[in-house]
Amino acid sequence: MHTSRFLIYGANGYTGSLVARAAAARGQQPILAGRDALALATLGRELALEHRIFALDNPIAAAEGIRGVRVVLHCAGPFAHTSKPMADACLLTGAHYLDITGEVSVFEALAARDQEARAAQVMLLPGVGFDVVPSDCLAAHLKRRLPLANRLSLGFQTFGRVSRGTATTMAENIAGGGLVRRDGLVRSVPAAWKTRVIDFGVGPTKAITIPWGDVSTAFHSTGIPNIEVYTAAPLGLRLAARATRRLGWFLGSSIVQGFLKRRIKARPAGPSEDERATGMSFLWGEAKDAAGQKAVSRLRGPEAYTMTVQAALAVVERVLAGEATPGFQTPSNMYGPDFVLGLENVVREDE
Image 1: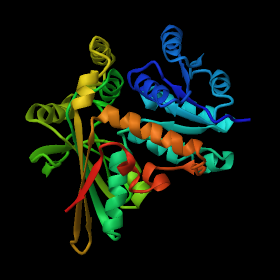
Image 2: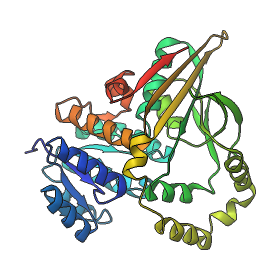
Image 3: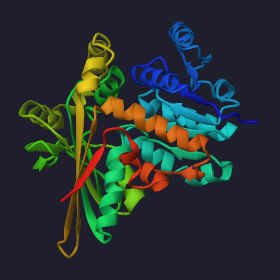
């Protein structure tokens, strides 16, 4: 018998702890979960919340860890390693699966389990944070504005540091090059394959293509077969990204990966409270059709981790209220293009 409670896995991580604190401040009582017994016990005492300790490398222990839970919000990345075992546990127990990934491979792997999830009456809804709620809703809005669109470009510009978890995922993917969608299929391209000037809302700036989650999700949300995603990039980042084309073999080596991850662990866990309070994020999207018509829209919102907390908890609340359709879903397919406008300080503008 499921309760109305939800579980946050990775609650002791940077983003997971932000979500846990925000949930507690709203009077919610999530179960905190993860592998670090000491950190979870400390956080559990501080927030007066139940905690459970289990790893994801033991399927039976993972299923037992989420038993009796209606919704799992999975916050422990890199999700390329952790999403499958958590999704397995959810399918076994009947819990709805949410996560905050931005990894194309994770979205595609979960999309491939659509029929399995339908049969289990479980919703698989990855990407309920900054990756990819605002950009996915923007994609769906552009499709609504230009129904015959066959090309979609999305992009974002953020100001502020990334968390250790995000940095670790970036380090693991640094040798992987880029990804775009062409004729409905995800295709590999060189890192920083294209550069273009984009006005995200604060003036024109140069941006490069990146293998962002919308290469997967925007297709599932809109059916548009050709998709590229950009991020604003100063000269140094553009040059570094292009350099990885030649150095991919070296950057992916165990020695370099170990060095990068040691450097990441020595950094602060993520942006400070002041940085989150003052930071902003800007998103841009452009849809085109075969007749040459174009639609451009922009979103402005809070700092990325702040938006992740808001979006993830908004989705949790919808699911607990019964708004969950079994199978693989995207944020905009499930809750509509305007879902993001319900988040605090999010504004959308159309050209």
